[in-house]
Image (tube, rainbow, N blue to C red):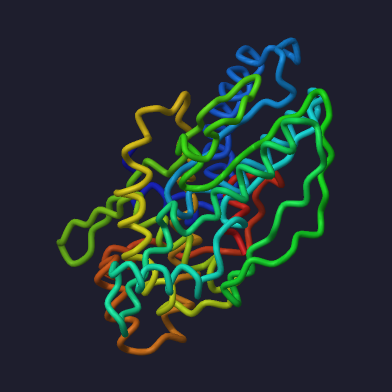
Length: 323
């Protein structure tokens, strides 16, 4: 779908922004109902020989994987499942380990910072499989946690117990990768691909602009990184090239295997993203402002009225980026 800046602004000007939020959220809710219906229809309701069901949630950076996974856990728990969300990010090797390996393998020249953190090799696959095998055999496990502020994996604090009606919800850009579940047996498995798919058009000084989904995702990520990872805009831009490369090389080839697609675009979000990004840009260096324009022409955002301070539903997928 293609949204027009005039229509978005009209809702703000006429003080009907809550209506736009409601329409946007209804679109997402309808998709979610379809997803839950698929899960319920495909699941054998514990009649299979294996204990655990697996939902694999993937999508490019800042698509809303974490919130989608947690909402799935919430709704399916109401059906009686013992749901556990597992983030593949928590199984990353320490950053210095990945850096050293890539230098030793000649993938990155000495002195370069162009490390590939998106590759499956940056994940401790053996440790992940070991824990999943124990869990599917009925044993309790304590998943690790990854601290992005220090680039290290730390010991987890939450132990999860296996029951007869388990649902593992695995989220991450590699969650579709068959290497992760090699040798593991699940009663049911469903692949879910999520991403914002919609674009926005705007016009500034007689020039037409198109803001595409990957640019929406960049703004989402920049805002989230700023709040949750204490990362300045420059750091997000440093990582973005590698993020996009990883999406193309490691995730895109597996997209055709998805069982269902969820469009996480919220028509109203552009007003919020514009407001927050401009706040961040005001505190950024001139060089970072210039680099930002290489990702998104700032003129494309000028026509949109910025807005924050509004209310969105507690179960909105956009809560992951609404600070």
